[in-house]
Image 1 (cartoon, rainbow, N blue to C red):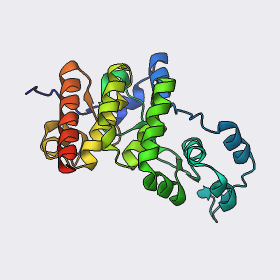
Image 2 (cartoon, rainbow, N blue to C red):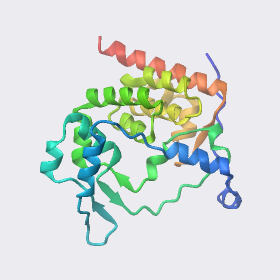
Image 3 (tube, helix red, strand yellow):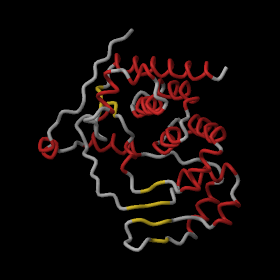
Amino acid sequence: MISISAVAISYAQDDLALYEPTKADYDYWEYRRKMTVPPYGLDKVKGLIKKIEIKSDDNDDMGLSALSTADFKSLTLREKFTYTMVHPEVYSQNCDIRIMLPNEEQKVFGYLLSTLNEQAWSQRQLVFLRENRDSVMFYIEESTLRSKRMGVNYKDVIDEINGWEMIPFIITYFESNKKDKDALTLLLLLMKKGEYEEFLKSTSYRKLYGQSYNYETYIDYNKANEALILERAMGYFKEKSDVGK
């Protein structure tokens, strides 16, 4: 068994406030935030989005930017996927601040960077994703192979629908995109969601999701940690697959 070297974030808040991010820090931050835009009916979807009238609540902290029921129902399955990926219907003002850390490309975070986004999927979008999870996973694989990129929105969907069946694909994707450490984060989130016992008992789980966790908590990226995450993820996949036999 490979041993893990896990180091949780230990910077004091004042120390982080003094850190001046470099251009490389900003570039990687943007890389982590980048979405993948599906090609399915994209021009049609963009045209419909332009017609949307935004509805705010009384205090303007939250609102809805949604297609009419008729327009939403008129979309094909693939077009609904594109719409959901490029246009989350709920927005809110988020006062939480995500601090940029030094050398984030050398860290595996416990959560995706989208966690504190000001946009979210509406209930009908979540229902669509969950009720069509097999098709959604197929579209993600197809689109990722086409674009060579699994954007943060795709990772969010896989986590949302508990797409553990995609673990081998995620691993293959990561092995050809080693820059994308959030693919490892996604594997961690799937094991966490599935309450995979070997992971729950691990030092890395306690570091990332224990009592002192926050959205900036991470373990160091190194070959040993990478190998252990991949090994555990495949162990979880095989365990889940065996249950279904």
